[in-house]
Length: 312
Image (cartoon, rainbow, N blue to C red):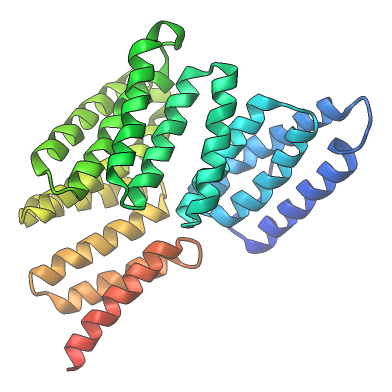
């Protein structure tokens, strides 16, 4: 498909086209509804990745709702589960935590019905991430432990593939994030390094998916930087942040570019370099733009705080 989704007009056209096709073809009562839905879903699969990687989460959710409605119409439970999980994550990124929880729980229930154990692990990880963002740390660890329990007890029923390897790489990372919030630096550092080791194996075993797994790895590198920063090891923190920025720019991941610039700004502040901190916070705000609202707001507040100190 030759669509430039970085243009707002093209994203608006995509929404209109998907909506019209779903209404006229997939939601009508005819014998071809299932075949036409497959065509609709094929288009969604081609465009959804681009919407996500460019951080157009609102458009991702709006368009995904159209496809979900059609999936419900033909009672395709597997695709419903997939879409609910994906749209739930878009809601979480937009800090709509209530809707994210609803989507994650419904997706998990459907995967349980389908006995899709690997996908259940993914949704439990998502629920853990959601709990962590809401500072519900014990609940987050409970969800992550349930995911590990499934990997351990249902391993014979889970295909040995890159998805299994991804769970084993990402679960230590997100568990490390919780320990970091709890200021258990030893435990978080151990988890992050286990995750890093597992990601290195994953990248070696599945080199054709390098960009995909580098995408996940950026947050891990940033988390390691934060771990060093909170312990006062600023030089090691800087190295991690600069590595994260390099990888994020390599794969054009704007959300972690913005987050890392803000982390570098915080680093410059503690070192007394206020002008550089203000400059980096401004860059983070610009990269975040209108789509990555949480980082943009944090960067704006941080910058204003420094500017007020400079003035007075």
